[in-house]
Amino acid sequence: MSTSRYRAGADLGGTKIQTVVVDENDHVVGQARVPTPKGDGPAGVVAAIAAAVRSAAEDAGIEPGALSAIGLGSPGSVDNDAGTVSRAFNVVSDWTDGFPLGKQLGEALGAPVQLGNDVRVGTTAEMVFGAGRPYHSLIGVFWGTGVGGGVVLNQEIWTGRGAGGEIGHTVVRLGGARCTCGRKGCVEAYAGRMAMELEARRRVKDGQRTRLFDLMERQGRERLTSGIWDRALEHQDRMAEELIDRALDALGAGIASVVNLLDVEAVVIGGGLGTRLGQPYADRIAERMLPHLFVPERPPAVHVATLGDLGGAIGAALLVKET
Ligand SMILES: [Zn+2]
Image 1 (cartoon, helix red, strand yellow):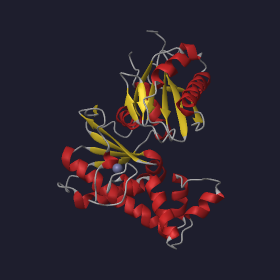
Image 2 (cartoon, protein in one colour):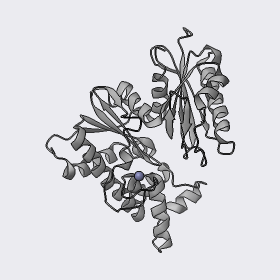
Image 3 (cartoon, protein in one colour):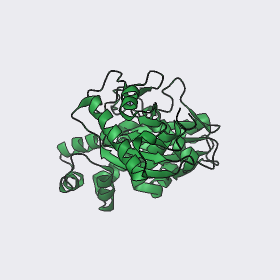
Image 4 (cartoon, protein in one colour):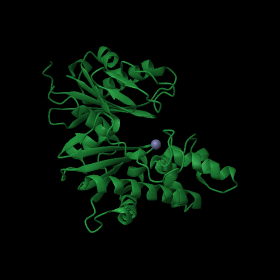
């Protein structure tokens, strides 16, 4: 293994790929961001990640060949032993089968690659460098397109048999709204940005009014992004307020249920919507948790993630620390 001081971390998302280069003290010395390519399948994604890692190295003023290793946080089912990622539908809509992402990225960059789940990696970063630093146990809740989660117990990420932490698929209403996972009544069916947009479109079809889609078109977007939800709330758009309210209720019930089970010290709220709406909304989630908490007089602290857009990539770089 190379003795280089520098490692890279990459966070593969549905809309963008964020990369960082860190030094031996885990300080970010370079970064880059590129859109996630949609047209060329997983192979196109590998090429884009490799290009973004090279750009981050350039930003750091080092040769890409000087990187000792690369960590990659990916959505979908990640098998680090096999070096494969499957079911990453957020990234490429027909990405079903296991694709050798680790091997191909390693060949492209000439350095070893470790894979991790994007949300678990982001939670680890918040524990080590972010809002979770003071705590031994916490859950990370990534409120964005979906609702991802990570569990930290005794300062170690708990992944169970590999899929642990899926707080978005905690059931908050039996027989409830259809979730993007195909099941019913999950937190994500009410709070995921994708599910919220589907519900908004359904309500518009029913004749209800909202500025959400006007704001979307004015910004030249095709999706209701976190920024558009934020702006609609600023305009006191009634439908946006109702749907966010419904999301807060689901998050409050789902997170409180997990707290009842694990009694963690803290909850860290990240993700596109979570970080965009910020601490006032984290406080509202904390309020919505209270009626469901078994020990309401001792609720966990609820903080917004502090590492922002770089958290996932910084956490990915931790996958290859001291290799
Ligand atoms: Zn679900």
